[in-house]
Length: 309
Ligand code: NDP
Ligand code: OXD
Image (cartoon, rainbow, N blue to C red; front, side, top):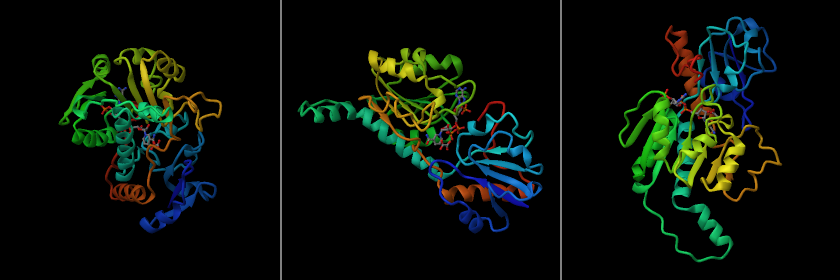
């Protein structure tokens, strides 16, 4: 019986060696050499072609190489009844916390304005408030956002979150559901999107949402490009409703060369690297889950196919 791997993220490195070392009891097959499909019990994949997973009749679990599972759930032929496990691993979490903290601090400390002043050789002593008077809000408050909030809380930021279910986390004001969105936005100066992409969150970063933020707010989107209506971001920057945006994800990736985001003076573009699944710790999580399944236990971090995350 075997595990098949399809690790073709932009930044994929050889995973097979790590699987062989960490999980020697499983034969590890590469995607382009699957052998007998009946032998495949586990799949560790990023964006498999539609219908491909259905060709493995004895699949016991599908592991997503990323935290997001939109790349799997868009497959209309995904095999029914097979659990899907999303990636939760400490180094992926740590990487996102570093990214979010860096870009929140950059906006908070007026980094873009100071960089512009330097370019123009302007000595203007910008006064910035300290963290307790800066209101940061998380759209989505799962594994990744909660760890970022832990660090921003230690720095003293005034934090809030918006999620489907209410949260009780020290130092973070919780807003939930449709009714909670407007008051959450009204108090948020730096908006960090760490939502999963689902039918409910598709296009959520739009003109209507930006209009509910305080004028001159900042946006950081490290969720998915599908969350953002890109023309609305450009319009909000043009009107001053948004002061700046840091975007790690885009509707079309790689971001096309002609995209206006590349050269926009108030946009920071990063190439979907806010955080990257790290091989060793990711394979350890997968191995632990496979051993749970083999022992008759349910895997951890399974996805609710109806909710879409
Ligand atoms: P989680 O599943 O742990 O958290 C998702 C959060 O979103 C939860 O708080 C959930 O609410 C909330 N949510 C989902 N749907 C809704 C909704 N309709 N309304 C309100 N809140 C909602 O995910 P992670 O934190 O692990 O990851 C988040 C996303 O980050 C991934 O799905 C992926 O798209 C993105 N990502 C991007 C990376 C990058 O490099 N740019 C790297 C890794 C991930 P509740 O808690 O109530 O369930
Ligand atoms: C993820 C990603 O979902 O890298 O983990 O985008």
